[in-house]
Image (cartoon, rainbow, N blue to C red; front, side):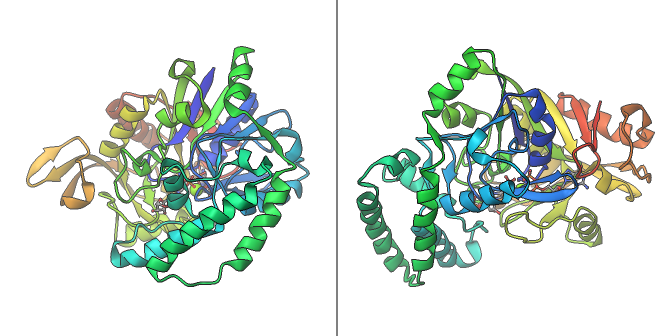
Length: 420
Ligand code: GDP
Ligand code: IMO
Ligand code: MG
C-alpha cells in the first residue's frame, strides 16, 4: 500500500516536517521526483536541518528511505547531506537506497541552467539553478546518465561524451565560466556514491508492498509547479502531482490509497510566474516576516499572499487529494482579518477554474473575509482547544474543497501538529 504526501501550492508548504511526523506510521519513505531544488526543513531535537535529496524519513531508525527513479540526483549535494545527517548520529548507509534508474545531475547541467536563465533576461523562470531542467531534458532527450551507469567501467567515457555535447550548447549561450572545481567535487562524490546501496527500485518497492509494508511517497515542489498542470512555463521540470508516483517509483495506480495534500493557511511562491493572490503591501510583508518566508534552498524572499481556493481546488482535482494537512496556521495568529480567494474575476466574469495561461490574463481575485482569531495557538495540542474563529476559517475551506482538513500544523517543531 502506498500513500502520497505532496504540496498543493507552489512548494514550501512544510512537506518535510509533515513527512517526518508521519514517518513512524510507514516502513518506507520514497522520493519520486524533483532533485536538490527541493528544501525540506525538519527540526530534530530542536535543531534545524534542511534536506534536499535524502527523503525526510531518514531520522527514523527503522524507516527505509528510497530515492526513486523519477528523481534527478546531484551526487555532490547527496554527499554533503549524508555527512550532515551523520552529524546527527544517523548512518545513511544503513537505510538509504537509490534506484539505479535515477538520472544524474552533471556539473554541466548546472552550468546550462545558469546559461539558460541568463539568456531569458526578464523572462527568466527564477530557477534554483541546481541543474534540474537540463537534467530532465537529457532524460527525455535520451542522453542522460543514470546511477546504474556509475557501476559501468565506461562511466568516464560516457561522461566525457555528454560533457562535449553540453560544451557545444554552453558555447552557443556564450557561457564561459570555469566549472573545473564543480567537476572535481563531482568525481569525488561519484566515488562516494558507489559505496551506497544502489538497487533496482521498482522490484525493491513492489516486493516490499507485496509483503505488506507501507510506503509514503514524498513529493517535492508543489502541484502548481507541475510541468503539465502548473503555471507553465514558470514551473519545474517534473510531474509533482500524484501521477508522478507511478512513473517515479514504478508502482501501479491501484496501489495508491491516500493522497495527503499539504497547504499553508495562506500562500507563498518563490521565483517568477503568476500568483493571483499575491500581496504587494504591508500585509504581504507581515506574512513574510512572521512566517519567516525565505527559501530553504536559495534563501530568496518568498512572495506571500492569501490562500487561493481556486488553485487549491484545481490541485485537489488533479491529485485526487483525500486529506489535507494545513500548515503554518500559527502565522495568522495576529491578523485581525483574513481573506480567502473564492473566485477569479477575469474580464468582468467570475471564474472558479484555473485558466490555461494564468500569466496571460488579468486576474481580479474575489475574497471572502474572515475574522482573525487573535490568539497564540502554537501551544495548543487538541482540536477542541482551537479558537472558534479558526474553526470557522477551516470549516469554510473544508466545505469549499470537499476534502477534509485532517491535521493542523501550528509551529515548525515535530510535536506541533493537531489531529482534527
Ligand atoms: P517544504 O519544502 O514543503 O518541506 O517546506 P520548507 O521547509 O521549504 O518550508 C516550510 C518552512 O515552514 C520551514 O522553515 C518549516 O520549519 C516551517 N514550518 C513548517 N510547518 C510550520 C508551521 O506549522 N508553523 C510555522 N510557524 N512554521 C512551520
Ligand atoms: P520544495 O520541495 C519552492 C521553483 C523555483 C522556480 C521554479 C523552477 O522545497 O517545496 P527549478 O530549480 O525547478 O528549475 O525551478 O520552481 N521551485 C521551488 N519553489 N519550493 C521548491 O521545492 C521548489 N523547487 C523549485 O523557485 O520558480
Ligand atoms: Mg522547501
